[in-house]
Image (cartoon, rainbow, N blue to C red; front, side, top):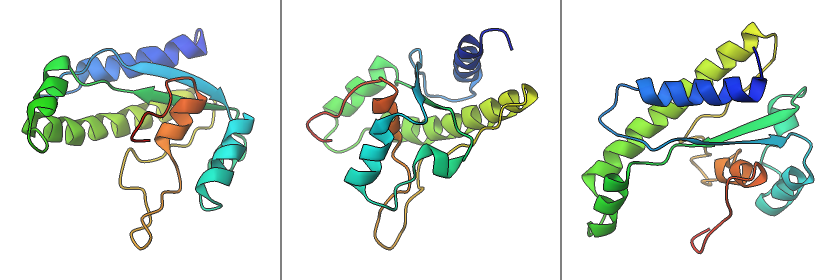
Length: 154
């Protein structure tokens, strides 16, 4: 791979552009964090011991890749106008999670070609059904990777 960061972003952008969905997305946002960033220790402390540290997902982890697929503006606006949840938003949620899982699989395959080990976490429904705790917080990883912050609704 040429510049690894550029290659990773290109894989993500291409997968979104080629996704066979009715949902339209804006350009994905991509960030990178050191797997040894002290914020990952803090997350484990704040969320609980059940939350995985990147090195518990992959002991050799060096970098965490985080990305976000923003929905097209019309989907966001439809949801703002809806009394509950707009159908467009619900469809985008389902299709978006499928695209995220496809991107993760593709990244893992491409990194393997460069002899780089990678591990992924499912886009959603990766929680303990008894106590509703998740072993991985995508939002927290995105925060550590510099992709935003937590808002009013956390």
